[in-house]
Figure 1 (tube, rainbow, N blue to C red):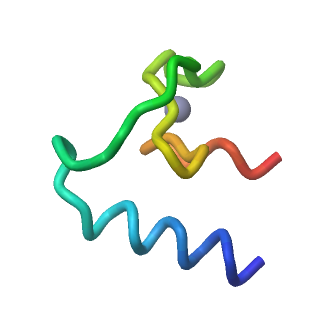
Figure 2 (cartoon, rainbow, N blue to C red):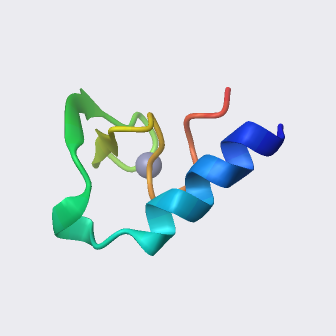
Length: 46
Ligand SMILES: [Zn+2]
């Protein structure tokens, strides 16, 4: 999925304080999911 890879690139180019986090926690690492629906552990693509 090229779109999802592109979203990851955008995420990693962003400073952490610039990323909006949703009020949803990742079931894998228990961190909050960001505005793109991705977590830094790489989950969210299933
Ligand atoms: Zn995670």
